[in-house]
Every structure is written in structure tokens, then in C-alpha cells.
Image 1: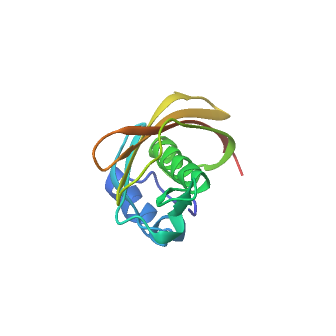
Image 2 (image 1 turned 60 degrees about the vertical axis):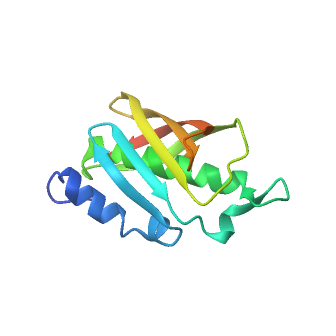
Length: 143
């Protein structure tokens, strides 16, 4: 996302994030975005996401992609597109195979500092079952 010339509103950030190819090309839609919080829905789940455990379940690498994406959106809600950010660490725990045609991802920023931001993530299936959790650390850059 390019840096903005002014702090963006929640609505402006959602509109911009939903046009980013990282999201758009894989049906990730930011449905909620406000201070330190983001929610993304992936619906329908693209075929490229499938193949986990040699089944129709979601592939772990693709779930990590969603974890990173929703954490990035939550952190962007605090930078307001005034600073660049980048993933510096990503941890993902696969609790249960995620199946079905929907992924519901939520992220909360738990600490936002001058140089680093930390977020937690939950991924749920279409029935609301918790399937994946994650933690993301993002570097906050001044260039």
C-alpha cells in the first residue's frame, strides 16, 4: 500500500485494502476495520487454497497468508497509511483442519510501539469453529 498524504479514515483504508491484489486476487475482503482491529472474510475459498493433508482442507501455507494479511490490516488501522510496515515474524498454530467454503479471520493489535507492532489472529471456518491461531510482529518503518 502506498503511503497516504493524510491519515486515512477506516472507510478509506478498507476501500484501498480491498483493491490490493494481495487480497483481491484470492477473494480476501476486509469487512471490518477500526482502531487495532480487522476482520477479513474469504468467500468463496479459491481452489488454490485447498490441498491440506491431501484433502479439500485448506493448505497451511495459504492459511499463513491469511494470518499475515489480516494482521497487516489491523496494524494499518493504527498507522493510517502514514508509515510503512512489514512482517518481521509470523507464528501460526494449526488447531484443526479448516474445511468448507469460508474463512473468517480476525486480528487484534495487542501492542503498538514506535518500531514494532504485535497482533493476534484467529481463523474460523464457516460454522464458527476455531481452526487456526497466529501471532504477527510487524516492523514500523520511517522511510
